Image: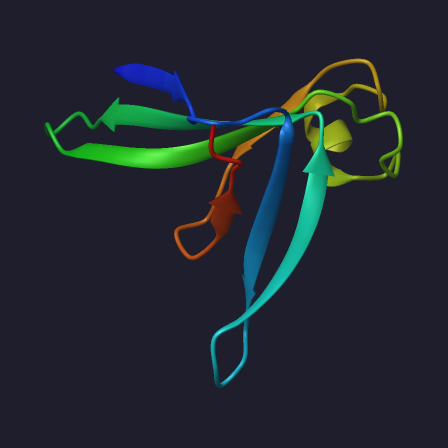
Length: 97
């Protein structure tokens, strides 16, 4: 990683939209609470530069304990923030100002 910048205008509430497989552009969107978005700059071993969006969920206490994030991290809901990158065809909306 060469840089991480918090997305402008975020106040811990975001709207995340996830692309769904369909003949037309269809997104499933939801409002998140206690979630922050970040722009992440990375540089590959071959010098290729990429930008990605990551989100961090600060409060996971209400999540299903069987969520894959808890299985991978070997933690329980509400004990640690969970961060992940968004797929290329997903969108995050933040509040301006």
